[in-house]
Figure (tube, rainbow, N blue to C red):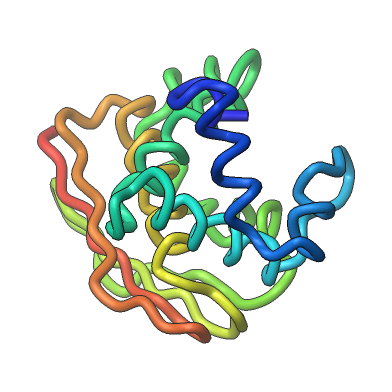
Length: 169
């Protein structure tokens, strides 16, 4: 788990301990073909904010970059390095469905060195979850050749969110 990689076993244990007991048990389950319920993920990010982030959601974005590096290995890494980011972003809706079973993602703006995406139709998201998505987008931009990517959460609601990305080509 990326939390353990960045903060050690003690940091991971403290985050788990800060979660409500009924949700803590679920986060310990290995789910290779299933995703954690949104309530569990939201509680995890709230605990990360409180325990590791000093009240800030920033750590969720940093942790997600480390997690994405682990997810995007082997053929995925080779593919991302071989194509331009426009090709990857053309497939964003498919990627969204790989991670989330609700809602949709769409680009509302795309240009040289910038993009804006809107996500709708979800429920139960918190700022930490949106920051996680921003971290993954940042890493994917970097892996496709963008320099100094910066992805910011511009709107973070329980049911929708907006991200803006800037980078050098």
